Amino acid sequence: MLIYVLFVIGFVLLIKGADTLVTGATSIAKKYQVPDMVVGLTIVSIGTSLPELIVNILSSIEGQPDLAIGNIFGSNVANLLLILGVTAIICPLPIKRNTILTEIPFSLIATLLVGFLANAKLFDDHMQLYISRSDGYILIFFFILFMAYIYNIAKTNKDEVLTEQKSSVMPLSKALIYILLGIGGLFLGGKWVVDGAVSIAKIAGFSESFIGLTVVAVGTSLPELVTSATAAYRRSIDIAVGNVVGSNIFNLLLILGISAIIHPLPFNVLSNYDIVMMIFASTLLILTMPLGKRNAIGRISGTIFLLIYAGYIVFLINRG
Image 1 (cartoon, rainbow, N blue to C red):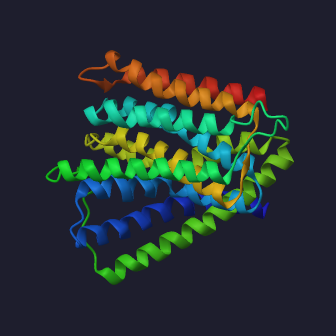
Image 2 (cartoon, helix red, strand yellow; image 1 turned 90 degrees about the vertical axis):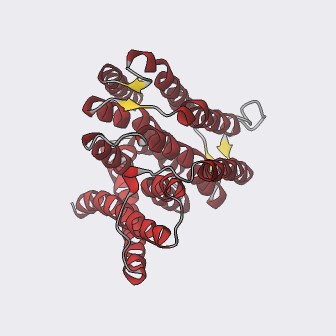
Image 3 (tube, helix red, strand yellow; image 1 turned 180 degrees about the vertical axis):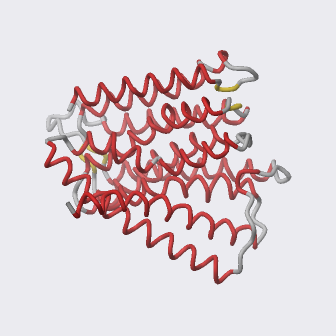
């Protein structure tokens, strides 16, 4: 019984820990006059992806590769269909030109790259698919390229303010305490979530991949959901889509890359269905824009996203 209680508390610590860490880091960045563009596209986007990072690091260390891969793939699908669906129903989401031309295509490239690396040994004699350490370094390299893109955007848009990330600057000592508390919450919460997920999978007869793709994936995506829903409620939603797509890129390149470097990740061929789903969801994001006004994801599109996500969950349940 205790492990279930800690499993729930772990999610709370993950969400609160990420929020606390982002608050402290953002305050320090503003104190030293780091441009808002850089703060929004780095600290905040990575911050909302920290739960996935902690869960994956612990899963890799404890030898739970299916949970690690399922968490990333499931989180990305949830970001695109569940979170954008809910947010678009609250308020239509305008998509920025940079997001359409660069970030969404880069996200697609990242998905295809992971799919290629995971299946590169499909025709070898051993037939053992995995994301190796060398693959992890390749993913990190592409993450560095994405960071270079963000830096270039920051240089050319110095005067642009990301209204979603405005916050008061706190004293340096207080900001450091926030950062330490956030890291502690993330670590402890991540451990409890991983331990609980593995136990639930064994007791309920579900695979670790299924638990990672559903319960853990949705739980670790809650920071993105809270951020996007709050933005929509306040009608300050210019960066909502970019934040979700950016988080997906971080998940695939940085988090999966680090996980593979810590321990090579055996890859189940069934996970290719989840890769196809990520590709489909990213493509759908572009195709549904004409249904909204002014290149926005409207309520009709949001409803479609939620229905497709519900169908995806049914598919996962049937798959076991």
